[in-house]
Length: 272
Image (cartoon, rainbow, N blue to C red; front, top):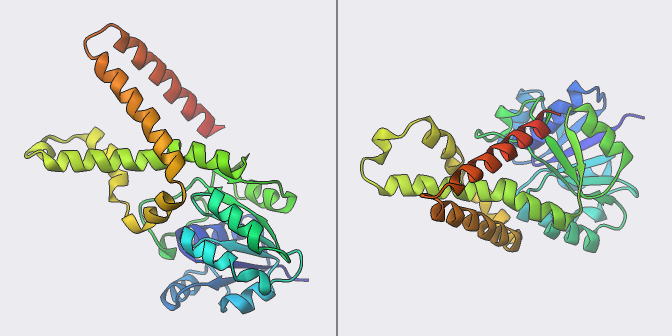
């Protein structure tokens, strides 16, 4: 029997997941559930085979991939279980996990839910920028184990990481959400100083790239992960204060050495 996968929210991540599955050997049918404009673009670019409403797509799917904004994922989880066949695998690509996993535990009975988060993306949005290599050599986090889903994650070239939802949110607050706020604060600070932009070099350009991210992507992240983000910001601000205190001391060399070792270690993990 032909396998069927539904992508609910066929944007950059959902579209790239569909393309990655195709490249990894998936030969079944891929259904898209999204806005009319997005669906037209997804079909034109060969990302999906057809489009259906959520109810009809869910009823015939073996795997349902929710790649919408977080609040929309929470809404979809509240209604999708009524449509699925028993045992249908449902997963998501939301950037925070605790609220999503909690909602799934409250609403999913016929299906089975595994929280997911691919640590991948790029500045450009939308299905027209989807690419099959987006997840290659990137961490892909699951909140619990599932052999079928894990096999596909490995086939698309991602590195599987299994974390519970709370640990995910704590760690990703530091490695993903705080970097966005750092970039936002730096870009705002540079903009507030007359003439600063005229002397900005590659460091400023690189560090402010994330500041161009639209707020509507981040609104739901801040709403569903405020506590861990606040704790991560406090940790980072504490490090900044240490650097400030050590501007004129020999301890600054130690700070640089520790940071360099950490940066090298981070890059080693990313290429494994």
